[in-house]
Length: 170
Image (cartoon, rainbow, N blue to C red; front, side, top):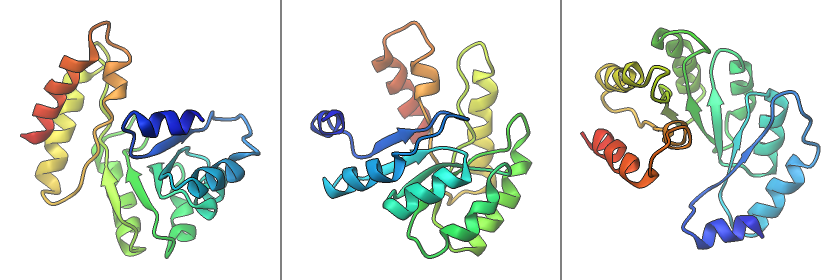
């Protein structure tokens, strides 16, 4: 019912977030139920087991792949799933290269997300990372997760989103 509410409100994809270290035994069943309702599903987990379960059940997008879970890439080959590649935790953009190479070699479509940080926690530097990724990979498709900023900023999210859209457009 909640997913239908989000679809009626304009959602294109229903994202299932998983809590690190907390089992989600119903994950496969939930993904199958959402897919049966003709909803597009993404899985937000770094756990390879959860990723495999969600993809087998029909999830079409994985948030996120980096050096911590890159071994799951071999299991994704030929599934049609798309992934979001991010830098390794607490590391620089150069840590993206092995992940991008592995995804490309496996023929898995991807988006690059250099990770947008909230104001006061590296916001300006994170915008710089997006510019650097565009310089390094001019044809790459990118993702900018605005929630990191809008959810943690005590201001109306509409104007913040407009500003971020302007940044993305440029």
